Image (cartoon, rainbow, N blue to C red):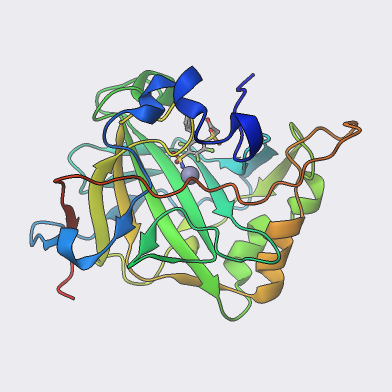
Length: 263
Ligand SMILES: NS(=O)(=O)c1c(F)c(F)c(S(=O)(=O)CCO)c(N[C@H]2CCc3ccccc32)c1F
Ligand SMILES: [Zn+2]
């Protein structure tokens, strides 16, 4: 299996030894700060088709030892990107109960509490995500920054299942719901740049869209995310908590991040 981690000898500094792209170009995540941002009036609001999945359908939620990920339905896709991109899976990145600063992208050097990623692949050019994931125009990932606020009933539709995916390789079925509810209201305001997967194999194959406005979840929901899961299997004598599963921000040389809003 994938022998990499976020801590210890297999942590991110060691990734390039087994996964050379992790030491390469166009790496993600990055910090968004004013001298690399450029307004681009051609950046249109994204259109989400088929995101309102009926509760008669089910999503598989699983713990893969690195994150908690939910497989999405192939009837979900995005328009208004250079190509049509079909949904593959969503997953999260977070910190720990003593330091709720687990987002991957940062804004002016500031971490948010956590970050949701919705991974899509270019279904116009490639048959599936595996064929797409190492191609420069292969993937499009939407990133939603999470911060503390009121209880969020939409996120709870996923979070309430965490107790059934505590350990690596456990799975549970989640009734369908409108995935659009997980996104911020303002879909027209976002950061856009070309980057990479933030985990090994770190392919520089991702068109990133990071929404400007964070979404709020409650302190209790965040604590559940930070304390519910383990990287290890249920019978492992040395359980490892799944915490701080975010990559540090990468150098961003002579490149620009395009913004759809005037700040
Ligand atoms: N932050 S991120 O969006 O770059 C990102 C992850 F952070 C992450 F954890 C995963 S994963 O599949 O859960 C585990 C590593 O493969 C993927 N999965 C990607 C990478 C490989 C692959 C293959 C099929 C479907 C999704 C993915 C991912 F794209
Ligand atoms: Zn991710």
